[in-house]
Length: 323
Image 1: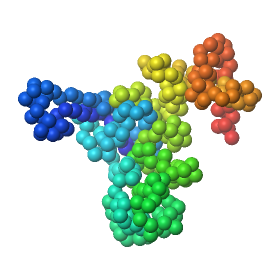
Image 2: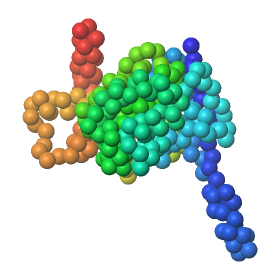
Image 3: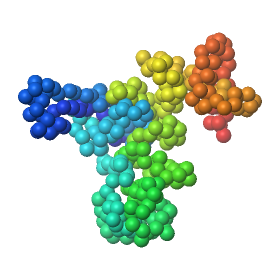
């Protein structure tokens, strides 16, 4: 069953209009003959659909239009063009740090934040110990919220927010809060929610998170939809894009080109595995430089060499599947 559809969704912002610059600047610019409204399309013609139980990862560099698209999906914004169709209730974990009062205690803020998310007082009372334990704040319950570190604040926010039981779950960079141990615990909590058949969308700058949690992926760049499809295919191609110097980057032109770029990354990654196993990788080389060097090595390989590596990858994949 299709749970969420985006049909040619486009979102336009206006800069320099009366609403954004204020009446005073509007009058001054009008008198000087300099008044001008500019349009900016944050997203343009975004189209995809998700079935029940799908988890979509949205990737793209800063300014790609990821968070803006989420606002349209959650109903915070109405698309300028196109249509978003959702079936079921939506829970969005966005801007976790908002909705807290720095002058209240951790305990008081737990109930305040819960109320803002629509939870009843009775529900929060029943879940309070679980919330505090998950956030690892047992010793700070009566501390003022402003006394907490940013990581502690984020842990409390996530712990409260992930009590949701929706049909569609929207996550915007919420799995990057806290230390590595808490990130792992947060990811496991989200996986347990998704295991119930929830349909989800994750926006993350961590390609590995998207690989681990998502079965579908959407790649955006400057508001344009570059690709939508299986996570390994899209993440491999997007990783190639990220590890390539900015002045040499290029976007895929079609599905065939996307597949070629993805295969190029898979082969480069296999070469990297062999280097690490043989301890032949150059010392003091950054991860970005290393991957780009391996990508260049793939470009210099003959078709026969590439085919050999592909066969190794397929055999490895088959062996993993059999286990």
